[in-house]
Length: 229
Image 1: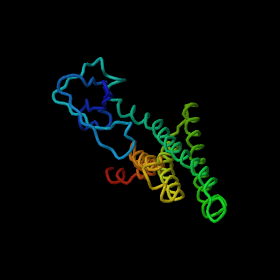
Image 2: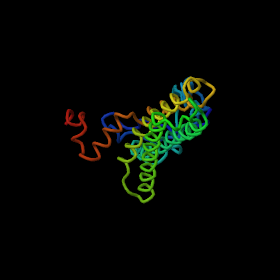
Image 3: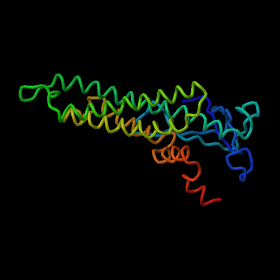
Image 4: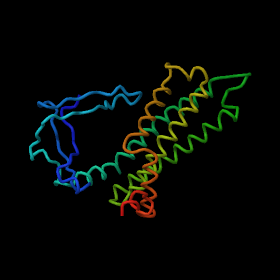
């Protein structure tokens, strides 16, 4: 549904690698542009899809930033967007946790509320603790960004930790609700599907861990760098 997109395209020679990528603003209502939409399992509000170009020309006035600096621009953007993705996951998990606390306080079995049973309450406590820790690491990364300090490692940490922890937390909430939790009547199933997709976007957990290792020990942590010296 967008009128335009930011396209990162190769404008230099292939041998220039990342230095040959430029950011361009491309209007989508011009001849030669077509697109399709993906029917995603979750996060449907994002509206992902594919865009195809057939002999489309972009004026130089639509260039964003300097030529050949597009890769740097998108990498810098990742340090911000990865933290925001983690916060999305944290928010989804916290909503399910809050609703689960209310449920176990109200729901009674054998004459006592579910919250009285440690087998029920302890897992919720553990996940709320992990979610709180992830939230604070997100805030720390944003504080570093505001201060103009490096935060690539922190962004990568929360990007792998946030979706995984949120998924596990929401899964536990579903189990706590029992058969009622495993229904479309409650929002937990939607949140579970949403955070699954957020684990993929802007880099998988494996890539995030590779980035953190690279930030700590340098290129020695990157296997392909050693193989292509």
